Structures are given as structure tokens and as C-alpha cells.
Length: 509
Image (tube, rainbow, N blue to C red):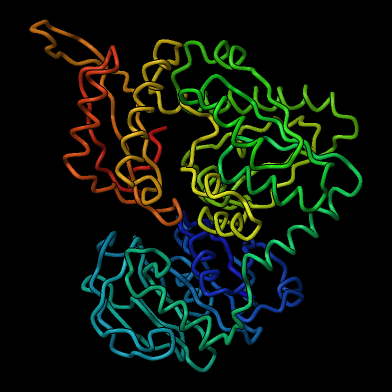
């Protein structure tokens, strides 16, 4: 296994993903982990993640320096590299010129972690500090135009530092560098698969739940559906799923999902219509974080009310994934900056009476789909595009009303129909519409109009941590725009979002 120390980078979970792509098990732990615990875990290697802090700041995260005496290979990335250098006697200072984005990497010593890498390649930088002095026995391996010490190493002790981020897609040969560390330096065995994960998760769920009842919020998305199958295999009929219609679903979605779920999942499912309750509490609310908190609270209130009807219910299961956690807070209470809360992470009331079970919280979406396939889940559920728990509430910018919901439902229905007809549904990570809180002047039938603006968002991605805007053919965009404007009353303009993540997020709120 590989131990990853979470110093708070927005990308730190991507490191775990890259490790797992090599079929190697990894675990993420906070910087305050005890050395004796590390010894008990017996990792083949340690990766120190990046982070938003500067090593010379008073409260910057640090791990016990004793890790450098364990005889275990260590890779420091960005802040993790700076921590390593500082801890071992080097010097880190504020950079004369900050470096963000693509940078040309010039390798002068293609050995160790840089073995087999082209001498001139690209990397992704994101730092405001730089190494000024190396510790004893460290050497420089690579540089960029702005950073003299972009990669360093102590080959005798198998310590490596990369100022750039090898885990992101923007470093083309980053995966090769990480594989060099995992396979050649740490000599890990490639034995971790979705089948092994499923077996372990089923055993852990069975041990946790025992003879008690467990409830799951089933949305019909791949996350909750896979969670349902996994728990069902562990505890059978002790699982009861609850589908809550929050009044924020897409056109006829509740009816369609009721049929799909009942046909494909041989599990106890209860359907609850709570739409009016959600819409009443959301009346007049415009702030996206308030929307999420309100929806999370009502969601849990509905669950607890329903749980009282199920004798012996002690646990609540959720399909929480890694991206949910990292965008809401650090997975382990670390220094990661909050991007946005998720209804199944930040919206849970402190007084929740049910105990939480989150068997997928260390997985990425593509891993969940692979797990679903391993468990035998139907293809229609496996390949359903992600749909946010707060539903259309965060795709309506500003106040949520029934008329605005009606407009967005019709628009969304047209968009998805055209995306599917064009054969792009599975190729796109997400494709959806956003109703803006703006109106624009238009002309329809020689008459002046002053109506709503719709934004179309479509992205490609592998893990939702990064995403690129989809290059949809102009002809298709034109057809979608024409249908929306002609068929949906109240819309006279359609725009297309060409922002990538980062700096934007996939959802607008």
C-alpha cells in the first residue's frame, strides 16, 4: 500500500486516483498521524501532498519528521516537497516570480522518478514559494524557466521532490513519473481491483450494521444505485431505500426513475413526495450555500421521519464520493479550502440520530461505475450522467419558483434529448442547462421580447476533479438553441459555457 499525507491541496485526492489506476491500494491520512500508526500500516511508500500553505507560516501543516527515518521511499509534491526540504535542513523562500499553469520542464538527470521521461516536457505548476537551498545529499534533477529546482532527489534514501503536480492531466508524463515511484522505487504489487474493494466493503458493512436495519437515500444516480447494491449484498433485506421527490427533479424524472429502479434493483424501495416542503423553505432564497443547507436539512428531516416508521433502523447510507468531500472540506479536517458544500457532506444536522455509512467515500466516479459493473448493475444506471442532490435548485441562479422550474425542466428535456440523439450522452461527463437571473431583449414575430437567458453547460472529464468544456459541433448547438427558443415560452436567448475546471466548477452553484 501507499500512504498519502493530506496537506490540504485541492488535488490531493487525485494522487489517490493515480495510485489506484496502477491497481495499488492507498490510504489518505492527516498530517497529525502518529508514527507508530504508520509503522503498523507498513506502507511501501509515502506521498506528501501539496497544499495552500507556505512552510514558513506559523500554522502551516506539518508531519512528524521521524517519517524520514523510517527507511521508506518518500515523494513530496509541491508543498509536500517544500516540507521535506525544510525538515531536512534546506531553505524555502517566497518565489521572486510565482508560477501557475503550464511550464516547460528541462530534465538534466533522468533517473529515479524521472527515469524514461523526455528531457524536455510539460508540467503543471501552482506555487508561490520555491526551494532556495537543498539539504545535504540532495541533487537537482529538473528545472523550468522560473524555477531552478523543479525536481530534486536523494537517491540513497529514496527521497524525491517535485515542485509541479504530476497527478493532474496537465502534466502529460506525470502518470509515468508516479508509476516510476510506485513500481520501480517502492516496488508495490498491483493487486487492488474493484472486485477486491467490493469484497472488503461488503465485509465491513456487514460487520458495522450487524442485525440492525439500514436506510439509503436512493436518487437513481450511479452513486446511490451502486451503494444500494453493495449494501444489499452485505445485509440483504435489512436495507430499505427511500426515494425522495424534492420537487427539484427534471421533467417526469420521478415517474421514470420509479420504473427503472423497481425493474433493476430487487430491493425494498419507498417513494416519498416531499416537493411542497422543499419549495416552501426555499421560497425567496437566492444564495447557493443557503439553498444547499436548506435542502440538506429537509432531506434529513424527511429521512428521520421515515426512519421512525422502520423498526430497528440505526444506520443511514449515502453515496458520498471523493469529489463531494474535497469540495466541501478536507476529507480529514485538514486545511483544504472550501469550494462548495454538498448536501450529503456539509448539510447534515448535528443532531442526526442515524449513524452514517458511506462505503464509496474514497472512490471516484469512474471507479464507482467499474464497481457497479462488477456488482452486475444495469447499464442504464451505471452510465447515467451525474445529477446534483440539490437538483435543479442549483441550476436556477437566484430565486426558485414553480414557473422558473417549469422553464428549466422543458429546456433540460430538449437538451438531453438532442445530446442522446447525437450519440454524445456517454461521451460527455455532464450536459445540462442553467436558468440565469437575467433577461435580454429579443425579437419574435416582429415583436419586442424581454425574456430569460439559458446557459448550456457540457463538459468532458475523467474524475470531476478537472474538466474541459465539450467541443460540441456548431450544428448541434444551433439545433439545441433553435428548439429551446421556439418550444419553451419565456426564453429568447441561449449561450454556451466555454469555461474549464479549474478555474470554474462544473456546476454553476
